[in-house]
Length: 159
DNA sequence: GCCAACGTTGGC
DNA sequence: GCCAACGTTGGC
Image: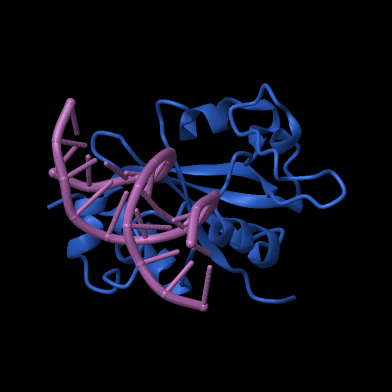
């Protein structure tokens, strides 16, 4: 079996938090509403079942990494793009040529403590995270090394 | 609520 | 295919 890939997905806890994910039936949700090509490509072309996903809370106090999920369904058409009444409706996505895709992810665990973006910036080995380099990308790759550092950090007390 | 950074759109 | 205008993201 191929090695797992690692990712980071952002969400605004005001809209959808890690606790909302944990409260879902089967602790699973479809990650709809992504309307950015690079983020879409990561989901559509990169994400495989079993991949591990860091969940990041943006526009939070403080913003930071809060938990881990796993990919349980590989990419399929994001039907919310076809729904005129949906917040994420996109008239340019056609049913015979869909533009947007999503995956399903399942809650795995909450970190013992939040790893704030401030901390990410200061920790050695995390300075190249896409989170810091391209702060606007909502679905982004994370290296195994970075992933492991984050998990390890969450086991330790903050300074 | 501000605004910098960045992605997208559309006129040319 | 350039690039100015515009919209969105997201930290602060």
